[in-house]
Length: 486
Image (cartoon, helix red, strand yellow):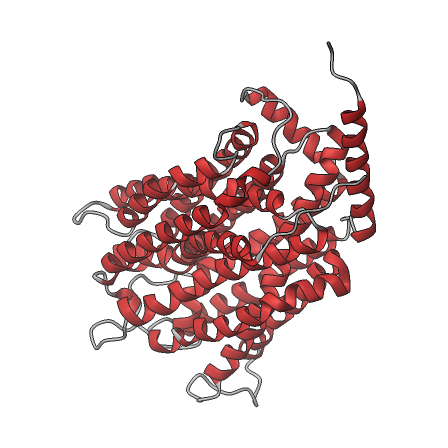
């Protein structure tokens, strides 16, 4: 008889999601604050800052497949993934704190080297949590629909981690003062910022490990243990890339991530210099995001069940692209009826687009991760091997490798448009601000649309996945019926 598919209770799903908070904090720190801090406060050029962050991303991207395949091949009494998640915590916290607290009186190249070293250590430490954590999700949720729910929890807590990081950072560490407007120019704020969120990441990872530990006996076991080797890793990656659906998601994410990384570089400059928001006003955006994220959790499984996963990716992603461009385009075109930055309507309008984005984006990323988990089942049917770690590490690799290119491009573009260092609000030339908005909005959206087109090549749906699961179950029954050698 076919085995009953184990369903998760609420507790391990929430605990699993809490783990993603650590990456959400890191992403908010890197995407919103880190480049701004080194370029505007420390005084490193945009090109060098972008290059340093890109070096860290390239290093991180290379370690992803290593972390994935090593955790795939590990078998301990604590499972395949949990030991790696546990050992990542302290190096992550220490390197994160030091990243935002460099010693004083160094040269520009000295700060460049400090940024490279500790950005590499932060990303490398997080890799040995994040990749096993993603693979653990594919193992925990074995049912087609519940995978979307589990990854919705993960996406929710990751986004909440980023939202709360932004809110508390702006309110507690970077308030607007007569001396510092924007408050992000205050160098003293980064000391408490680094310490607070280093501790928060340790708490999130610990909660995830403890909350999912009871599921370890029920997780899939490797049928045979193999030693790690780079030649074997290369062969496993080639096997994964033979899957058509995997290639569709991989190359679609390549274009999408390139855009997101460029926009991430420009994001803090947009809030302050394009829209003229104070840090107190910027702190309201994560609050709006929080409401959108809460609604996105029940929305994600409903949308994926209604549309199936591919359309649940494509339609919300298209809405998010249009939503992100409307206000920027109206300002760039200087439409007569559109309110000026001095109008009290601007903040509610930006809050509205933030709400729509945070409603759509969790659906997109939960669908993507759930689709990669389904590919792991198809890959097992094709090869006889479960390689969640390799699959999710390749997914993470494309995000980080193209992210590295995007950071280089974004940092260089800041220098190309001659964005001044240490710029107070209202002091940046109008032409520079216009170019800032043009790059953040329509100029990069072409590549996002290319990514959407590539996602059309994904071929798995609910019916096909049911066929795969049935075939795997029949294979297990047939294998069990073969008598062991005497």
